[in-house]
Image (cartoon, rainbow, N blue to C red; front, side, top):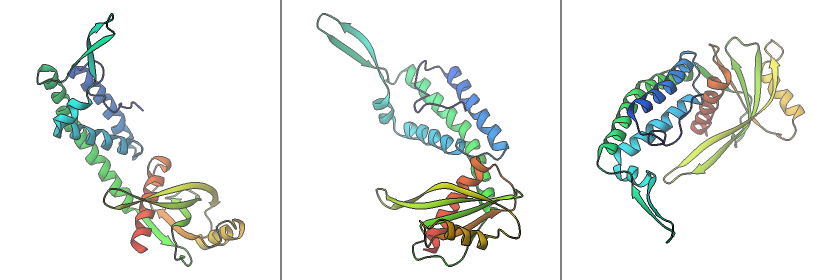
Length: 238
């Protein structure tokens, strides 16, 4: 993936045309992935860069503070270095603001498309609890069926809770366990029984069956959204 560095728009030569083609190459690759319903890691990366540009645009002082300094004079005898801030209200600053404004305009439709794909995939995800869910549903198994694929993939999951400045957030860690062929024998209930029988380290797990009626790119789309949807489902039900 043609990635962008955190401060790509102010690194190296601050030239609008150069930055423009750098951005367009990045967006072209992202759009190619979105056209194949591949969301991750592109959508997260795109939103990060978009918000980063907004932050600099809305807070000029932050831009001035973050911009690197340029060595303007070195007095080797006195071992004294003089630095001059590159950022001032001059043509350079105008060039940077031009790059930022252009980039935000170009990123905006790509983000909207990514969110539309996200909402569509999420709308095709169905979650069902299998068996009795324990009082602590934050550790268990995710049984994942992807459209017409002939297997059910099993992941052990653990929901983590961490606190932000004003509220608590939930994340999820998963590890692949095994796969089962999709047939009348290995129903979600039968898979649950076998997991409990063979994996005694999780004696009373919560088990959720997650499936879609459309086959999506697995690693780039379905698995990340299934994990997010499961966290939302558990948080709502708990």
